[in-house]
Length: 415
Ligand SMILES: Cc1cc2nc3c(=O)[nH]c(=O)nc-3n(C[C@H](O)[C@H](O)[C@H](O)COP(=O)(O)OP(=O)(O)OC[C@H]3O[C@@H](n4cnc5c(N)ncnc54)[C@H](O)[C@@H]3O)c2cc1C
Image 1 (cartoon, rainbow, N blue to C red):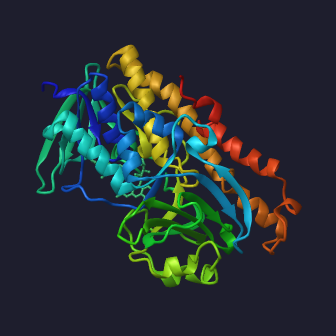
Image 2 (image 1 turned 30 degrees about the vertical axis):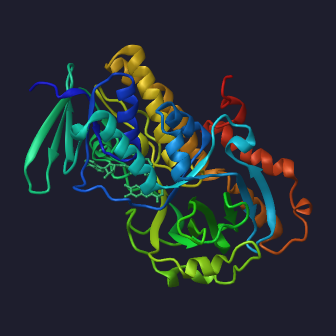
Image 3 (image 1 turned 90 degrees about the vertical axis):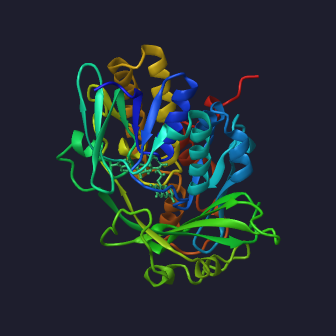
């Protein structure tokens, strides 16, 4: 069987589409195969931190992201009573060379999808292609697909990259004995709703801690109507005995979690009112998987959630997939489209993302709120300085930035 191109990408999600743009820019031919038969704007909000935005800027996407998403100005923490704990500037306001964007996953996906079609052509993405297996030999990789009508086909290239997300078929093939995802004891309810801007109009807010209900709230689209409303994204987390199904589109019910949040009507935001008017509500489990020792097997490797599914607690799910792309492209340029390049990528990114997966379990940025909750016993406080110093809070935040690869001093623009 002859080769269709140099690189086969399995999955047209955030990682797969970004990889296609990056390879195209490097002059490496590729094709993407995606299971869905139609692309729809699915999901809710995601955050792109400056380390990921730098890569997307390198692909010429900065202006479009700024036009569609919200340029985040601050990351701010409150206790469950709505009392201020800490505010930190975000993106350029914090001295980074690149902004932070809060954006609807559907909008981000749409930008990437349209740009792939514009730059690589209509036939760069093959829909209705469910990967069922991949084979590889010394010369290349062959991916086997099935269409919805039951027919089968194959594609061959020098290498194949599994960007097929949290239910990755390629990961299952490489690690057939891997157990079920690891449940953190928390389920999440998510939604987006139209509201007037709150705080700076570009604030990413975290409120409360998990035993008493934790929330993350941020705007993801500006000026969505003539009244100047924004689209606001929220996530509510509570302790649960069992994980719900790991399905990004699973519907959730208000009555399953609202009792934790129904008294949260603060002067800076009516949180309870925001939840009440949201339709639909989605539900997702807080799960991850133990890091695996390697992703590369011969001419096949993994990228993004297929490689390192992580707890969504540090705004790094999409970001680490994008950093994988940057590293993989660099190695393919350096060593050619070869096993050597995949092994070098593996050597660097397995270690880097393993650290993030493990830190997300024990000390993500919202550990700030855990610390406050534990020190106050969940009781109201008068002054945060009497509970914890600003330096202690910043130490938690800075440790996460260092491990996840977005220390401000590492992300300056050269003049
Ligand atoms: C529908 C959906 C909604 C999401 N909503 C959110 C959200 O609201 N907030 C958030 O933080 N993250 C969300 N995510 C996850 C987020 O996109 C990823 O965590 C992150 O961007 C890493 O991207 P990825 O490319 O590795 O995975 P994904 O973006 O999940 O992409 C994986 C792609 O692979 C495709 N695929 C899966 N199996 C196969 C197969 N066998 N053959 C071919 N293609 C296959 C999937 O259809 C998908 O397009 C969502 C993902 C999906 C698929």
